Image 1 (tube, one colour):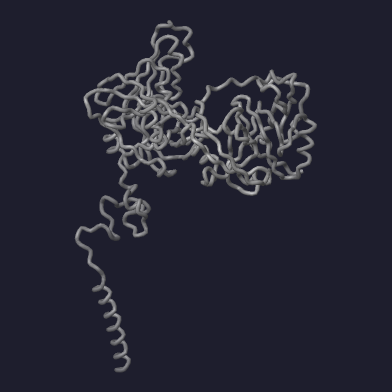
Image 2 (cartoon, rainbow, N blue to C red):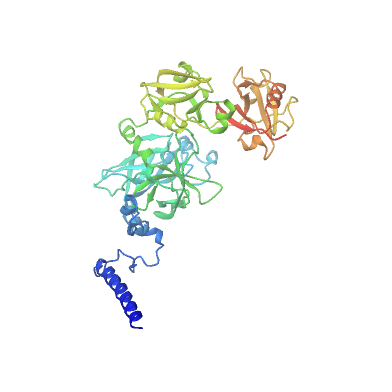
Length: 508
């Protein structure tokens, strides 16, 4: 009994000694320290995921900025003085040029003919000051065609503004006001650091309700809307309405990361903003020249995806595939052709058509570029001199598609086609000498529908084989196996460009 008691005593003594050692070796937390497991009143109830600063695994950027600390009330109070209302007016015929798609206008914009030619027309938009001397960023479409610009500040002052420069291709404009300085101004952030799901707010003058603040998240980055070679829109569900155009999109740090520019007509929670880095890149030229000069190859490009690689039997899955070459352009003079794959510029690899387009656009006209490309499996290269990129042309009206007796049924890929030749090409606004098959109808949910082929397009080639007749088209289609991938070269009469689509054949 005594021996058993002695063993139990020794065991308990050892355990107590270990516990005392642990307690003495644990650092004591100073009074009021909230950095440990205890949550302060300020952070109590906040999801653990938002307390990144307290985690030893937090990245440097997370330790620097804690999303739990976002307070858009403070941000709006700080940024509101830098946001302005822009009144753009024109008289008579000049009013027809006030194309304010994202801004608010008085009356019916299509009822110009019923008004007195001398009655001024007005449109309103937003903008924001970017420095204390009075420079303001806004949208090109807010100031386009205006004879007089009036800027109303948050303090109630109204000042005349002059246009410093404008860039229709990116919908960016720089204007300036004069008056007692310094003016309140916004801080520009880094739109490249933006992430999908990040909280943002918009400030502007929607529907004449001045300095309206709305909050949402970034829904998508890099959205293409009008020009696939330059567009890089930020999509957000922060409410943007008519009159918001030109106003700032602001991140949780209180920095401007976009210029609100467009809205979806089909939904009230889909808006788009020009990334501020894109605006920052053109500001020097807008100030110095009043416009933006960009390098130009004169080729239409697309990415090499797995379907394109398989259908054209390309040796690699990266690069920019040439779909069309503009006559007389640097690309045409250098001998580039459709189906060429550009793989490098001045020794720098080309991963996507987007990266190539931006690289060329960032260069000055007249400079040289050395291109490496692959044609029919063989590596080639060429040095060419860039031209100046032409400004975006106005939209063309689509010609109505007329019926013809020469057409297919919906059996081939879900397409109804009409043969195009010299006798009927003029009816469809097709360039002289072009032959092919006009898409008259597309069966819903067919493989052609899934591929994005649209009514009114002209099919020129399938798998690099010209198709000038319905018989020839059927021959190429029937030669393909089940679930094969076809590369279809199209001509779009509306945009006057060629494009390549991949169509996966159906199982037979």
